[in-house]
Image (cartoon, rainbow over all chains, first blue to last red; front, side, top):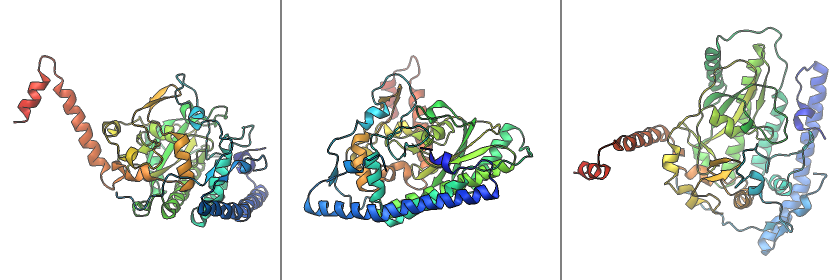
Length: 67
Length: 343
């Protein structure tokens, strides 16, 4: 997997390369927002439920390769 | 600064199987020098890098972020597309290295930084097994935070201000890098700790000294600022590390140690990867840092962070140190001199 730099930094851009990079980066950011909204929403609600009930929310499950 | 309500250091989240100690990864107790290893707030992914031991905590930190700080992070992420760019084909001189460095530091301030300094890119700013960026010099920028907002640590309002400042620090670095490239020299902005370490570069560039709370302390802003940098090949005169009297206070002051809810700040310097320095217990700090989304208590209660205090404080501490040194004159009894002086 490429690093963020390798994926999105352009040292010798052309108009088309820049446009394509911006589209890819926008897609990446939308994915970040989606994950925060959907998965993050589930995690936040579960965590708050645990907090109110005095229980522990285990974060090990987040330690997956696909994150 | 008086703290507002402080949540207790009790956690409703945990690990079933705790990862390897962050202190061990950081090299606490290690006597031989080595580069730093990424522990947290670093995707650690891509470019052949391993996933970090504390990745789950980092993901949890990001997922429980409130909308205010989160969307500011997203904005700064979008800014990152401009960290690198094309270099102008024609090289324009900014004078000799000293004149060029002074000019670029002034430009950095014009672009929104509060302080700036230059150093040579050295190994202590690099992570183990990471490729060294192809640049020789680092221009470190310090962008001040709004103290009024930061007084709300460790609550969301302060977290928003931190992320807002990171955005401004990023903007200043981008503008400076773009300016340098327009003069025909390669340059790239760095405004996160993902690829390089900002604090060692800033220390080398004379922005300040490392404080007991593990953050940089400057005369101008105390610890109330955020770092970013620009790496470049333009020949520049380097600044030297400064001595502003931080240890003279930190060795006896316990403000951050006392106010730290998880009790993560150590009163004595520790051996860390071959260097004796101030060190914060990662394994204690990270839990509270995650729960409060960035905490910040230590940097705001620090006496150096009181607005307008740093310059006078530094002058007083250095003057007292000079006096102590002068009193140790051979042939004279220091004790008698002290009691005589008190009359």
